[in-house]
Image (cartoon, rainbow, N blue to C red; front, side, top):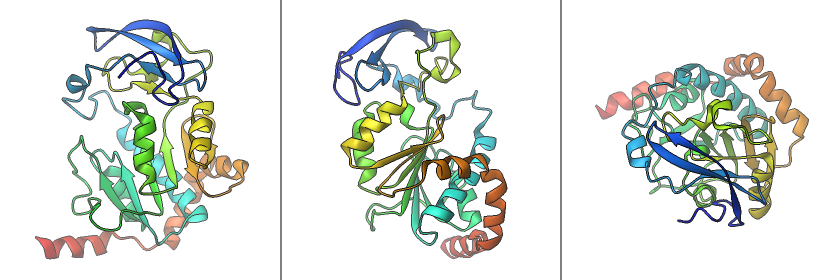
Length: 261
């Protein structure tokens, strides 16, 4: 893998700064001259970075999943088939999957780095029909070594991908001016601008919608951009109303798992 070309669009990149990752690895960062993607040099430190897949400093893991439950509940209810199958890719401990099943959506868990603690029994099986109505992928794209390849793989499961990652500001901030670089843990190795996703959407003949900061949707569907933003902004008020109309899978899941024990 070379750092002289963009890992998104394969166009030339230029060095923008160097800094220390994990307090020991001097690392160069590059920005694509075409799509704006910012990437580290070859991330040789990743085996060390993933000795613990969930960062000890991730104090926001629960409140973030509660927020994402509200966002996903609102968007799925209005834009997608509520009764369809859903996949959360890069699920971590399974908190989000359990929350979404508690609402009433048939979500499955998949993560190659982390143990499933909260959604056991609902792992995604590729041996069955791999197609799902919507794939969620939260706080993962910034971890991908080859994000363009990862996206192609995800699209094999669904042409609707709801994801979260922070847009990198323009101009690109200095190493000590943006918390999302995550240099203390070394797992964040690539950062997106809106035009980065615009490039990926055009490449795969998809539409791209964003709240302008951290929630984004790649989809075949044609939506009103203002409606997408509005639903995310007010999802904490809308989602509880939706949950009253849904039938939770909590008890059904209990009965299913009880028979397997």
